[in-house]
Amino acid sequence: MNGMRRLWAGFGLAALCGALVLIAAHQVEGPPAYRETLYVFGTLVEIEIRGEDRDTARTASAAVGRLLQELHSDWHAWRPGGALHAVNTAIAQGRTVQVDERLAELLQEGRRLSCASGGHFNPAIGGLVGLWGFHADTPPQGAPPGPDAIAALVAADPRMTDLRLEGHRIGSVNPAVRLDLGGYAKGAALDLAAAELRAHGIADAVLNAGGDVNVLGTHSQRPWRVAIRDPFAWGVVGAIALRPGEVLYTSGNYERYLDHDSERFAHIIDPRTGYPVREIVSVSVLDSSGIRADAAATALSVAGRTGWPDVAASMGITAVLMITDTGRLMATPAMLARLEPAGDSLPGPVELIKLPARGTALSCGNGRDNPPRY
Ligand code: AMP
Ligand code: MG
Image (cartoon, rainbow, N blue to C red; front, side, top):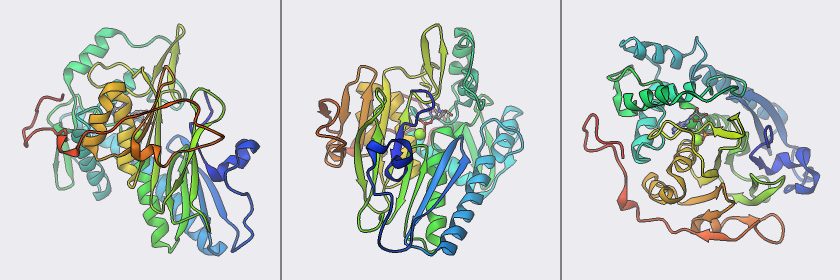
């Protein structure tokens, strides 16, 4: 499965697999679609704009390209030269540093999302992500890190609530905080990219970052249809017709991993143990906010097969599809109502999971600096 994408937007299916075309390749009515592909955030980002003249679409798409490249280098977790790298360096040295409005807001939002997830989503654990070898452009090789090194980073207990944000100055009371925004940066970036398209007057478009998708408007006379890929087979679990402004994000433990001695270690780390998640193979979240859906898909992977409903409810997520390592399919009623089988039926029976009421929201406590995490 390595190298295969976890989810395909309908518009890209023609190129990938003729049998799976969900949307006709050629529209007869209106101007043709404008398409562009960029390489950012370690993945291909496909932009498709419909119903616009070529010049408008090209100008808007170029602006999105510039924006995404800028965010990619600003928010990069390990490459020197970007704003986030400067923050991590300052934190490690016990200093504060000035950041721009966009990064300050992203970190504030990261703190809120981390608290709402009960700490399962924790962008402060960059030290662990790096320790497992995921701070590299190529897949990690060799043996997993030793238990002592893992235990030391877990004991150092880095949290988003350790950050001190005063205006645009940022520091941390805990030098073990190392920010890695990989769990929600794509969602934040696609939300900003969608706003950029709107500012250029674009009404109908899709942004697809390796399977994480934001849509504007409709495909033409019909909705944008996006397929969720089957992590166990060359095919799809089903498809969803996205309403204007909706997003669909998938976290998978099969996309980036370390293989060693026939064991596979995924790139999503449980902050409680310091070890990669095991039992969840793929989590898809349908929502109206890319940043929240992205953070939630990561958080629910960590929360696992019994813990995820509480975390989803606390984060305000209603539509979830979860696939476990044993092939079990679980979905919330809101997701099941929207999931259309690709063929005659879904690939297996789907267990319906009702979420608890949102009143049971998780939090970081009442303004206390270091409340218990779980
Ligand atoms: P995603 O594909 O959105 O689930 O994001 C996975 C990425 O998020 C990893 O490659 C890490 O950079 C980062 N990450 C890993 N574990 C966590 C976690 N528990 N909370 C937040 N971010 C994480
Ligand atoms: Mg995510």
